[in-house]
Image 1 (cartoon, rainbow, N blue to C red):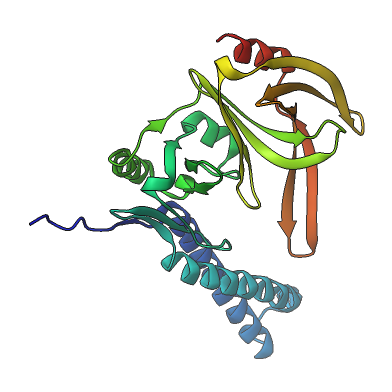
Image 2: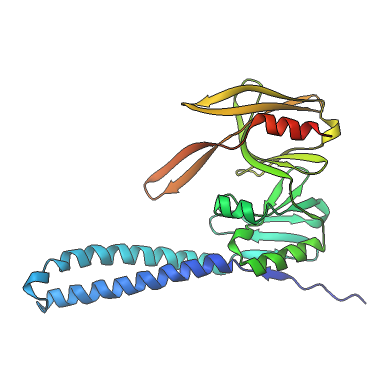
Length: 276
């Protein structure tokens, strides 16, 4: 009789610790603000400090708003994490839909590495499990380094965990120069993988380098005055245009903002993809 394999859960402890710090600081500031407001109401403050009452109201309002937000996030993180089951991997991350993929549907996992995590500051996710048509974002950036090693080891029991030779964020275009998706481009030892960075998390192609019928540099694209180099890949009679520029969107309380950045050089990628 076989022994059932226990489900392993990895909570996002690193993110939870940061939230706890914000909660403690916000609670302390709120307590100080309430104390100053109370002293001001009782006229117990020196005449020279009477103006602190107004500042205390502002500080208290901001501290309370931050504290309530952190409490909501803390509650969401308690229900979040990575679950490694015997037959699948599941991920629940705050603000995102639940993700899961059966091991039988997965090709391999990818860990982009600590250097990428440091440069990206965890804003674009670390660790992914790729299938034929889509992928699961693991959000390893939310774990402590020790947790990341444990989670990677647990995943490695089910599939290969790969590290790319080259990786970049980019924008996938069609032949007309129209945007298809903001994407992720991976180069492994003998294959190249192109996937959507957000949204539906689609995998556009996973191709052996020897089966690419064409890899060539194209004219640059311009976003305002920013020059983004580009190149094209032909695979299975379909052309994929890779623009080495990426738009990062930052959501805020009063809307969202975005900025473009250059993410690579076409010649380097063309040479790397052509060395079959």
